[in-house]
Image (cartoon, rainbow over all chains, first blue to last red; front, side):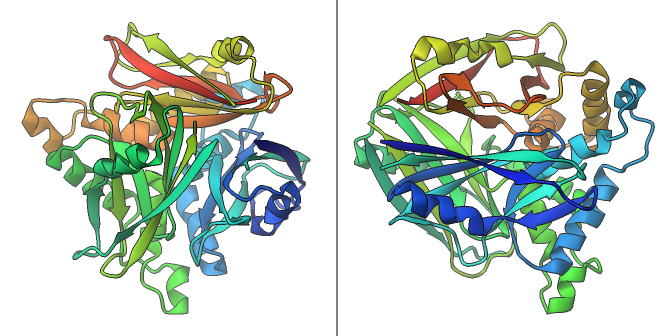
Length: 136
Length: 136
Length: 136
């Protein structure tokens, strides 16, 4: 069995920013894994990783929607610690913080519209995502 | 290590429909895997896969609830592309689009009430779910 | 390949309670797995498993927020079966019911603030979480 680990670094210009990372599937080729799975998981608790459409309008819809479900600037208890990002913890929970991508025939086995995104909700600083490929 | 891949096809009669797919655990038997995991993941971005109760009332509760959290028919930006299914992208995000099922002793190792569902939010056309079993 | 399975039991005093379970990563050491993944998955459908911050204020924020998104005590159809816990099924869906933890160098490869929690939404009785470690 082959197990390969890599880390992706992000430092977004905006506090909230969604970044398409599907191209980093390059790690699959490098790993030599033909059949298996790749875990892609945010290592920070105010960011998510999700699979959905690469369409700017929809990305804005997601952001408007998350603001409605988990608004910033409220009187969260977490803010009594000096933090101001409780909404980021909630938003990343809705989006999910990790995905497993199947690998078949040496490639990511994704549907026609599946794209992997890093969803940053408290950026403007260095943060990591782990990619772990397991298979044969 | 054994790695077996299968695809489940769906073409629901209604636009929104939840289909129980636990019985497709038959793939586990066929695979011969005794210990491992099965990834079950929607390959389309307007459908989900989730684990919950097989009870019609609760399934209706889920659907009413999702309509409240992510209503159809709103003025989503995604619709400027000609699409009308932005709500389906949001709903599937809440439900999740993939699950990992543990396999122990050659069987899905699920709790007494755990059932796996395919959640279609923009159906009436052919769509796929990948099942990938890894183990020994 | 090594595959080790363990079960964690919970019997919370309160109906709703979040329990940090990261320390149970002891199973990783015991398993002898140096590189791989650990699945941690709730086996009951009114409980979740999630990764987020170990900060009491934020935990309260999560609970207040979930009550707003999926309130208890409503006239859910599921309750026509005699149950009164439909909200617990919805809440656990938002939080997620399983996580995959990467293992690198014989340890859980988590970010600085990542903590694993068991989220009970209908407790005061015995419930299980499966932990399955796969790797080498």
